[in-house]
Image 1 (cartoon, rainbow, N blue to C red):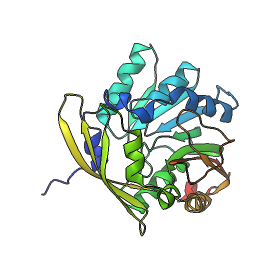
Image 2: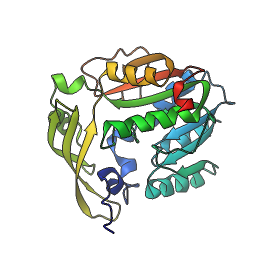
Image 3: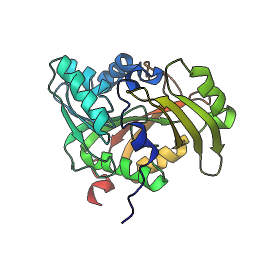
Image 4: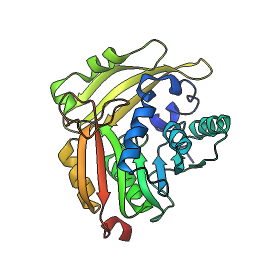
Length: 266
């Protein structure tokens, strides 16, 4: 039987946790958690799930602030790093390895967070991305909240994705090359060049899905969300005051789940 090839996002995170923590796009944890706390009205009794938690930066910061959070990720390497960091702070956090398309939870959490494209928008098909939203919704209790970010499909219509990646590139970080944005699928096909934690240089062919606000709204309404707010996502400075524009590379979504969300019965 032929062994199934790993997807790029599985290969990327195999041995790339310490270097990942130094990437520029993961440096906004404090401000992002400030926003999450405001959305929770600082209610420490709420149970949270961090889907695609990576090396646990949001889970760890929110636990430090007194919240009860479960972090899940597909990558064994990322989770090992998350557990190591939690131990350094003497924090007990429930980190579990799961595929976000097949979560084992059913109405267990009050709030879901899914930040920095930790799972959603990385999948190879739109159906798989939808499965992540569907499973996140199933994991949430009635009258709960889902907070997540995704790539803003309005950005590539007015700007070059290639030029954006070049403008934010920093020495020692991963580099995106050969970006080709497909208007028919709203996917950016690129090559990521990076060094893993042991110093091995790697190149991976990747593709990421960008979403426009109307798509996200329709997908969430399909899953029974009654209130959907979409904002521009500024690194480390999430705010309801930031109206989404074509200048935002990412969008921030805050959705409130209806008590009769259809996904809970499918």
